[in-house]
Length: 166
Image 1 (tube, rainbow, N blue to C red):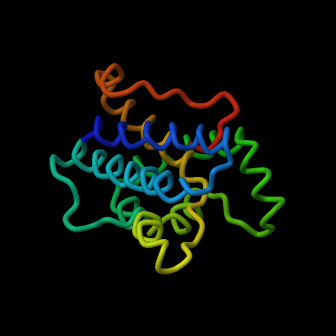
Image 2 (cartoon, rainbow, N blue to C red):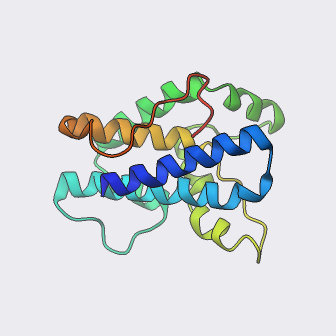
Image 3 (cartoon, helix red, strand yellow):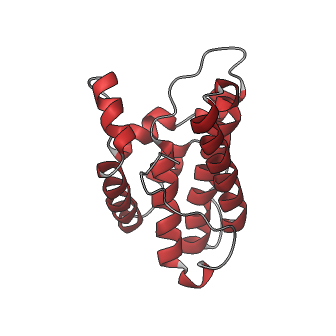
């Protein structure tokens, strides 16, 4: 499960890098869908680590996060806050969108249904996916703190030096 989430995360990073180089907006949907699906599977992975089973029929990010233990939520929030503080894109988002909520809860709300919304983006314009990349790194870091023996499993995904959001 962790390796699968990491693979989707890596695919999102590749697409993000391509988008940054080419400004080809046509890849936004698959990029965000990979981010959202990775976040969903990372959250389910935490549930499996803690309880031995994924939550039943929950797919939305905020709902999955809400069902985590208080300790898990606190650690993930701490990692997320560290990432947001060093993310220049977060500062740009604050300037471009006054009033945007860049807290973990705000971003979970914004990205809650990102997979479904972006999968069907040809039907209705999706809402923003927020700063979901920082969420992915926070979830991954928490998982690796819980399961330190997994550090060499799955693809290598470094936190961007300029923290590009994915």
